Amino acid sequence: MQIGELSSTLGISRDAIRFYEKRGLIRATRRPNGYRHFGEESVLTLRFVLMAQKLGFTLAEIGAELPAASGSEISAERLANILRDKLKLIDQRITHMKQLRSELEKMLDSVCPLTLNTRA
Image (tube, rainbow, N blue to C red; front, side, top):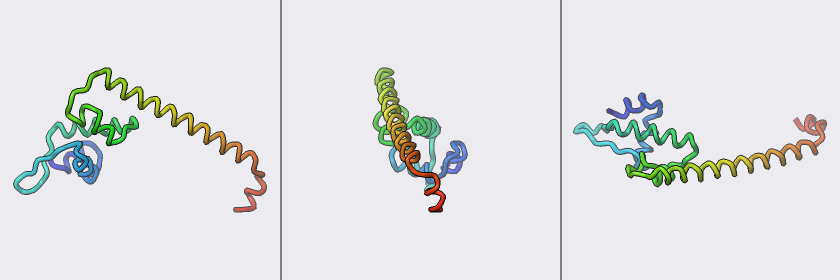
């Protein structure tokens, strides 16, 4: 399929597809007219990449570790460890964000509401 069809199928821009191709996550062959041609594996790979990004994985992590992007097999144990590590990182970020929120609340509580209104 051509890039426009792939774009429509996945609901992402042509520029995004070119970016993923440039990063080496998908490959296209060139037709005699110069147009890119993407196989069905590109659809599967990009669906996997988009899902992994929603889960918080970076493109570097996807390309290096995850099977659909790298084209290599990965054990269930290794994949579970990758997911556990990502979950720990997310939990750490949540803890950090809660701390920041608490600090902001303290700052807001220490500011007189009347002085906030006079600055506007």
